[in-house]
Amino acid sequence: MRGTKPPRDDSSRWPWDVGTLPPPRVPLERTFEGFLGLRWIELSVDSALVQFEVRDELKQPLGLLHGGIYAAVAETVASVATVRAVWRDGLTGSGLSNSASFLRPVTGGTIEVAARLRHSDEREWFWGHEFRDAQGRLCALVDVVIAVRPVTSPSP
Image (cartoon, rainbow, N blue to C red; front, side, top):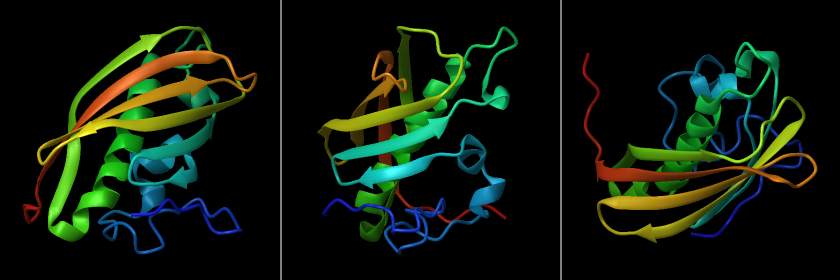
């Protein structure tokens, strides 16, 4: 599967609106991913690049970007990238483990997240993420394992 970039209008719904992922069951703007405000820059079978703005709603009370945001963004990126690669085969992906190391505090600006697939097999995909601030400084490293399983029908 080749890498893709968002349409020229930089739609905030990309990659969900171009047929490379299953149709969302919940409108994107009502999901946690929508709340995070991720801008997808690139997405391929073995890498992804996203950006997001640090805003007050993503900070802890002392003004730093909340550590859980790093974990949530990394798991979202790894899940979307994995599902993009496997869903047409009747499979889905969901988070199995998540490990974050915080290297530098962030209080504002744009964060860029580069994800790289480090290993995959029929049951698990292992992703490594680097979070960098607007000055290109490494702020956090997050490793995520995505479980790959057959799609099941949702419960009523």
